[in-house]
Image (cartoon, rainbow, N blue to C red; front, top):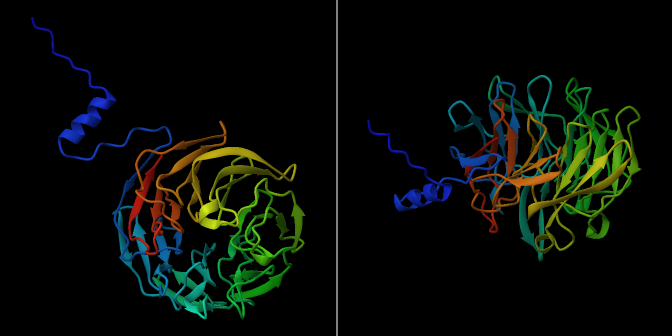
Length: 381
């Protein structure tokens, strides 16, 4: 009786066979998961927002295709079909605004810049104080109260009482004017009310809601365009900010994520050199000691990734923005591991949104040129 013929093909052999067959080689497996394309957005955009709704769909709102082409357009991503569908437009064109899912299922969209153009050798634009609400039940946007201060590149955090903290940013008479002020949006009244101010005006900074309900604010650009290492904590009970330990490295255009043990991971960003000063370093803030300690280095340098950092259901953190590939931080080992698959370009001001099935939608951004993409990807843990 003949023995069955067996063959063993190595990983290198699989890659070679794929190339010889005229197809792209499959991504090399990685314990950090993989990234692959999904359906494309209806429009190219960067500086937009992406918010997972109560039914699992994702609201994509605003952003810009390029300088001078700012968007009021919005669309929905349906994970069940992998497709994007256009919605009615927002009440304003917005980029670098904030979007916050409220407990009533609606989405608060606030601030941002409506247009940006060159005037007398300087970039200028109209910064917005207005807010609006997206209602998933009707698929429409309606105005709500306006902030007390026009803000662009501010931060927004949903507090434990269901209200929204809006802090920092730039705007006012000069869109480059920095704000130390903060305010609270109350969904019950639709109004914004001033609260305590930070010790230092800052934008674009990183924020994280701590397990005790306070809010960490770290880094950003401060007075005289100086990149900051300082950090502060907002206490909603007192309505005040207080200083805490300094970052090991001054940084702006970075990102933060709360870890399962209550500490906060800070990654990337850049120094005053901006494009030439991008960072691969990471650090961790411990609320118990109020100190920052080193968390090693990412695989690549990244900045402009504020909305492209996601904590996964298993406690690891996906870093998807500012680079041509994604990577995952494991707090148990303190290591960064690249995910399989390529994003093909370092997308800046893209978004990453955790889906209900544990996957992550990565959408939009612009590469090392000025035009935003309509491309999107799915990260599979």
